[in-house]
Picture (cartoon, rainbow, N blue to C red):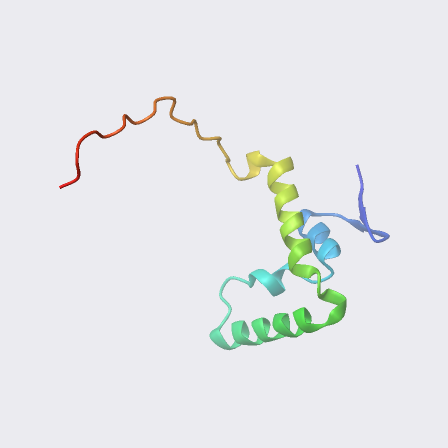
Length: 97
C-alpha cells in the first residue's frame, strides 16, 4: 500500500511524518550528537516556524498525529492496559486524633 501525502509518496515512516507535518522530523527531535550550539540554532528555527501563520496549527496537528499513531499501533509502544483493582478500600472508622 502506498502512502501519499499532498501528492508525494512517502517511502518510510520518517518521510510520512515529514510530509504530514511539512517540516523535517529532526527539526523537532534533534539528532544524536548535536552540539549545544547546533541545538540552540535548531530550537531557534523551530520557534520561528511556530510563529509563522502557515504553521500555527502545527502543535495541534502533531498531537493528533501522535495520538492516532498510538491508537492504531499500540504494539510499537508496548502499551499494556492496566487492570483496575476490583476491591475497594474499607472506610476508616473512628475519630481523628
